Length: 235
Ligand SMILES: [Zn+2]
Image (cartoon, rainbow, N blue to C red):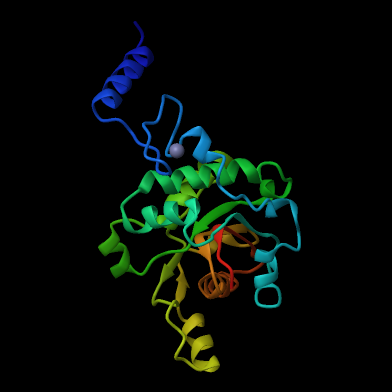
């Protein structure tokens, strides 16, 4: 009996005692299913934005940052399966969900030609304190899934987050801009000259965080930027 067969048996036995459950409907997953059962996996409302140049994600960044492509995997509606999955990923330690969604998204991006021009996948970093509290960065897990599907390296050390950009509602426009410009800094950027970076994040809302990342990366000479998010919430 070879090692692979043994591992399969070990895995089946493990699942017999500790069945893995579908994150959508809680039914036990069968061999070959991952995170979602087949029927739940078909329920994700994919946008197919990667085939549409002037998609909603691209329109949200138009005039704010220069980008090559901007796309999103699925619509993020209240009480939807994708919202449930992203919440699990962010707040209930469901790390495998991030890799799963990233991988599925990556498989979709392979339907285009432009993904081949991407050199590095960069996840939106969390602030150090927030990451310590959560124990992981959900965007890095998405980046790892994308990286697995596309065979493009992901690098979580290029961008560093100095402050949060989320709660900006009480700030003036000037304060907001300053806050954003100083939110991220870049490390070891010498090898990035002229490269095409795909910044990835979980859910696109106002786009302020991704815009702030792009502002930091734009300090690199000849840099090209694309943006990819798992979900898009209505603005
Ligand atoms: Zn299911």
